[in-house]
Length: 178
Image 1 (cartoon, helix red, strand yellow):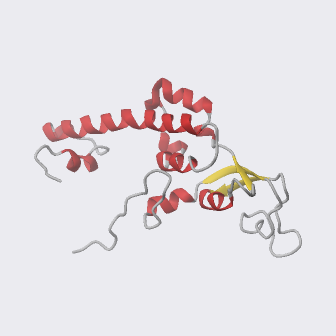
Image 2 (tube, rainbow, N blue to C red):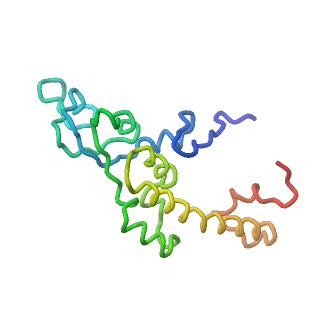
Image 3 (spheres, rainbow, N blue to C red):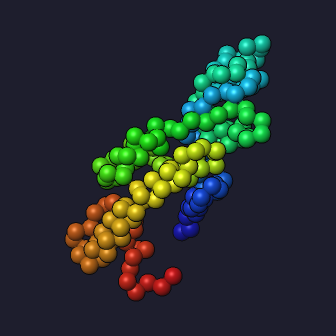
């Protein structure tokens, strides 16, 4: 029987894949920001208004929590409609924790789309972008090594397989050609 849904992988780098459920859910994650100019008829869409009327605009200087997809649409370096701030997990304090030992932090609890969301943050003009990119690479590498070694050991010693590593076993079978 054929599957009803064939998984589509998430987009890599600054681009997202609109056919990927992971990318759609990731684009709904909220970003802290500030309105740099008056934003008419947007308060209701962001849950800050009670409906249509004269008070349905967001005044300049207001703090916002906006989804990533909307922030990417409103952030334009020429018009300056909004400015985007870094979420706390991408700030310097957390980057210091990750550089010490990334394995002690539950990234799924902090943000289930840490890698994809972080790569999308690189679209915004932020002086900390090189440090964010470096941190994402630092956090990714130990997990990749752990999964590879665990998947290979699960193939060698099937009784020691963990449920975390089972989905990765098929990628590391020694005599599988791609």
